[in-house]
Length: 309
Image 1 (cartoon, rainbow, N blue to C red):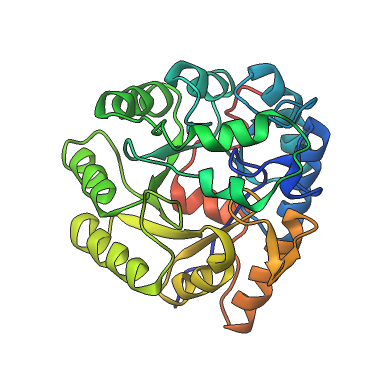
Image 2: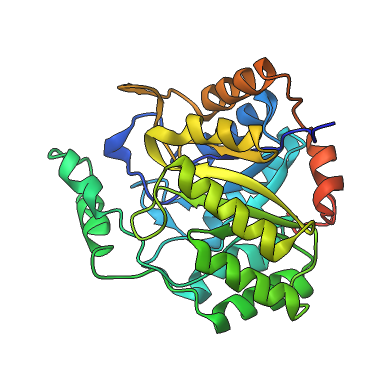
């Protein structure tokens, strides 16, 4: 029988800006509410970034994170997953500070340095709510996202070995799957691995079924039966490729971090709306949805109570 599908919801991220959608969660209250609603809709994992509540700018402030983490923990049973990606404009120390303090069950881990171009979004808007928005987008034309081998090893040691977090290994191309296989061979990562195939970021692989098939074939060859995969497709292909991935035996990720829409030309009014839509699609395919406890068992997390919030 097919495994139950784990739904991850990435509720706010650091890519989209307040001008782009009035429904993008910004304040701690909005992020907590969006997370709890997504969990009630069927998300087993909540992937989290923070924002400055005054401006909506991406933030790595531990104070901002700690304003919503306890609320999410109290309001739902979902697995909390804190990003170590933050923003390409943040230093490694800034990006890791929230997870080092909170010691969550899961953290994301981008498997390499890369061009992470979100500057094309700037051409879609002219009337900005905040001055920082076009500047942040344009900065990605000249600033790569940095995660060197040394950076990856620091994250694995500090958050994995010492704090007991499991990882959402974000792979944006085939080379990053090779890097993950290298660390598996060296014993620095332990199965079961949870591998997020990320498609649609400029600088990584594009959103096509062919790229998804190639990534899965590469992971099958390199990681064998020691991994599970999930699909993150940025933008308009979010639901389509998530569906293809689930048919192939994978898990799915949705949320306003990855796509602001619910259909062609229509903004999603909440993260929960996207969770409900992918859940309806999966259940129509006779696929069952994993609960948070089932996700914890599959991914061997340390448990909800063993976190610092």
